[in-house]
Image (tube, rainbow, N blue to C red):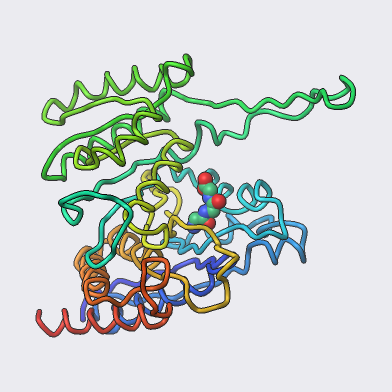
Length: 364
Ligand code: GGG
């Protein structure tokens, strides 16, 4: 086929179940590459993570960003293991990449898959789906602060952790949320802050939200405090379309959303750099799940769904759509890992997704 695209993927399985789910995601991409005949890809593996830290004293190579900056995309597993303090593993790998590559938009769709029981008591569960848009480079994750205020005597240490909100940072993520809303049937953006208590950064966010919203008169808007929004996720999920929030708030709300939909194991995400200088990174929302690592029972759906987001980002919209259809057919058919009430293995779920992709192609 002419004009076949070729992609170079930087693959970072990371820790715990990261390796198991990433290899399944790559199996799906490989299958699509052969079946669609529209693209080829190569994978460069990077063994970064907690084991690497224990051997080398760092989570990734010093010139790690340099090594992956010319790849077309980064496919990431999970980070964190009990052998390394969480703040070291998170800052040393995931945050270094997201912040170093200015991946400012973390897109986290919440979908209620057919055949998955879920934890939400709602009459039209399968009609529910919303997108969390997480600011991904600043806010509470700015890393500003210190534990330098010692010398006051035992038990009297003081630590400072500051949030940084820039007008540009707020504006680009809020604008992105509005642009996503324009593509949806119900055009609505909900902004979440805690601006009653955090009277500087989050009031700036609210002001920017009001200003940007005036440019999108066709988009409905509302604004909620994060505590009320947590309740709204449970009580009125049908009101959610595109929800935009700060780094920390959206992280917490997206865990709540995917848990309501059944499990963190089914939640995909994209860390997007949209200004053309760096690659974007695709990863499931879940962490490394050390308690089930190595058992072959981790849910691969979040990571396979993240491959769909990656292909969409690379211009392969049809292939991305096929992956998502195949995921739905798999759960609808009762092929489920334990976290969503089944007994299937990681591999069996992937096999089913691959076989549904083949059937979908046979119909085209
Ligand atoms: N695949 C996502 C992942 O590994 N997350 C690890 C984690 O602890 N993330 C916390 C955060 O990014 O706020």
